[in-house]
Length: 376
Image (tube, rainbow, N blue to C red; front, side):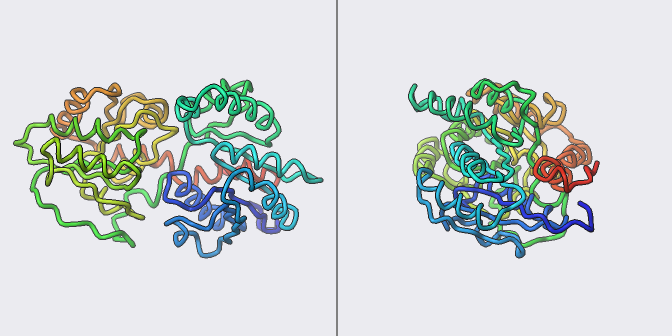
């Protein structure tokens, strides 16, 4: 960013500030943009979410007061007309569609960039034909009007191309940034980590307790590990399936060996204790938690789900990939990983490919092409 340029303003549009991957990632990027001389507005539909207190001090929070998507157009357009940000960044269909409509309805239009962080075909496959038609038509009509379209992985880009009818070359692939500093050994403002009650290895998963994360598969794989390992499985996160998972843990005879630790705003302490990180998802747009694990030098085992894990792990060069839905294969990979030796420095080096400064600069080149000096 040129030092002589006026401070550009970036508006980040989100439904709210609940502790999800996209919300965390936007906060990480905002810190980079603020450090580079930008002003940042977090424009949210609803004033709620555990990450509200995690916003950077210099970021501004703007609440539209729109409980549903259908009510967002008028207050969003009013904000854009009054504030005139230099760029609007929107994620999460159909909020992306609303952002394009609102930004393009003004004269002159506000520059709008849309980004998608999930395999939408998989995420909405059970919603029926009408929903899928609405998804395809709305994307086909609106995404071509955006100044730029970001996909967090090549798999997501291919999926978006199929849904929108736009050539895949019209989508920019920008991976998600790592959360926090790489291999930061300095104790930070982390949530307290309960004392470990077992001397054996700690197997870690971080993620919302919802069906797509397939924690049942992870628990079933853990049950297949030799009891002599004296291992503990800790799942950090909360969500709608907590009760179901608690019952599954009891029914599997794993009480005391599997812990549902709840939400942690900063799971750094957990990563530092982990012996292996396991992702058991059915699909991921990217897989931020894999990068977080690598950043702490923790070896990774992941299902080979579409589409992010394979890209992060470079086809298995930086971690183990196993087929989805197979608890035996997942258990075998976990056991092999626990018994192997690992080049911690190499894992951390891979995480450096996703440094926030690097990813934040890539976003700026798309959001503010005229103001950027295109840093390497």
